[in-house]
Length: 332
Image (cartoon, rainbow, N blue to C red; front, side, top):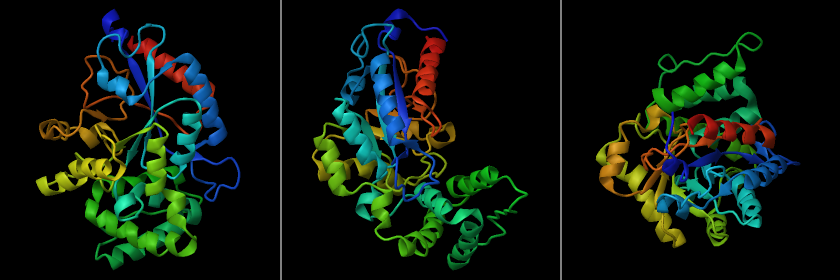
């Protein structure tokens, strides 16, 4: 790919974070995430290498507004899932004068229920695969679903744990109807984490007061559906599209007194947004929408299919800097 100087002058990269884990006394030490001290290194090194932006600069988007120097592309920090970890990240960024965008699924604030991936991650972290699958079988039976339709097997010492975890995620993301997936995982959560760990929800997700404080710090919030589903693959009815995709904007604006103009597709891969982009465009609800396609954003990038570079738990500051510089140089 080769882009012109005019486009290059307004090029920018968006980085996407999920878990930002405490350095000590982590209540779920097996959760894979970037440690807070490593995250601080990320912030320091990226601030030196890039022109760190706020969301308002992305919205402006005019040639030259994002980055005037071709050797200094813009960089926007983003965070998905409304995780409790993001409160500490927000404070670290604010100390560096950085305004980030935090995408929040509204079920964590309205129903005070964790999203599906967070239940899966934390149950696997605490109980392991074998016990999780035992609870999974019980939940299927309780919800009137058949294990034969949604089978997952694990033979300790024989099966690859990573492959089994991927199979678990795939069933809940794409194979099971979202309503059924919510009922199954809610049953598991109610009969495990919620029962076993005191105040566990506050360990998983942001509270209303924390989100309000983050907005006061100068950060921006965006919508991430209501209950964190794959918007395209769920084939939502008009009523459910309104509930899951459009209503979160109104709720967040009303609750936090701020404009919400951006949306992040849960999971964010092509199967999660292809087919939903036109519906989002026709609604006129959001000006920007973010995927997890690893690409450089330029003037000609569709504002409803913006790319992001996902940061992984093992990424050192040097690794993420190298990856982002390579992304910029390859696509420029």
